[in-house]
Image 1 (tube, rainbow, N blue to C red):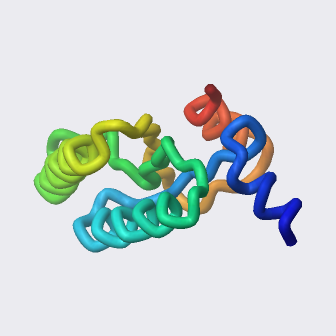
Image 2: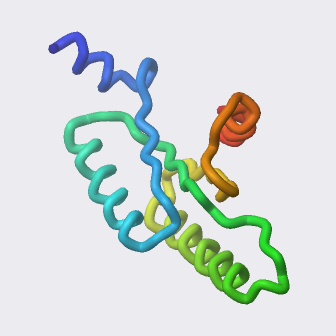
Length: 111
């Protein structure tokens, strides 16, 4: 157990990436998670915001409103976690399945 703890706390070998969605409750939950991880000396410096609406049909008022809300939440995330790298994954139609979908996401998350 000591060796596992040592590996998990070593930023050269391990990094936790918290994943959240652009909603207030998720931001608050992530803030608590990050605090807990720091308390136990687990390295976390990157957040992944999943299901971010990026491209919308300008004729769809509901879509525009949702995109604006996501932009507001992303600004809130940047303000809440200024020292973190923030990566985004776009909202996909349907579930992400298959190699092509995973490769697209991997490109967004590559460091």
